[in-house]
Image (tube, rainbow, N blue to C red; front, side):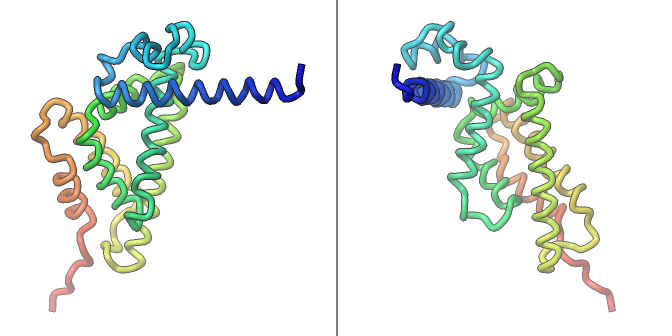
Length: 200
């Protein structure tokens, strides 16, 4: 056996895993979390359900990877278009209105991953930590340049902005007339405010 055989098998396995992930992302984006069966994803890549589970230990693990992939795709798509994460979050919320299936998946996954044994538990916790801390850094940067009130607690704003984003997505899943992006931007402007005027 060639010494390169293990490397080729690894590369082939990684390619198939990528193919499954891409198929799952497409199926969920168009059909939603509830209507996306493991069988449909398997059919899209020419495998059986058992074949898919050779690469992902469970549907839950696959769905967690889909959310991670969605996050990476959004970061790549909007890279350089916004100066900080506050702007990026607003743009992402606007984009989410075009992919209801992924919004449904994200909202369901966040709730289900509360259980420590869920495959996405650590990912969701770490994701929240990263987003909240990065948003707080964005607030601090805007405070330094004078565009945001200096008396605001950056961590409080970051937590509130994250909760607002998630809450609006839940409302939008029930009522597609909810203007997620418009409401988020208006609420964020209220939260951030401007430096208070000094009365003479």
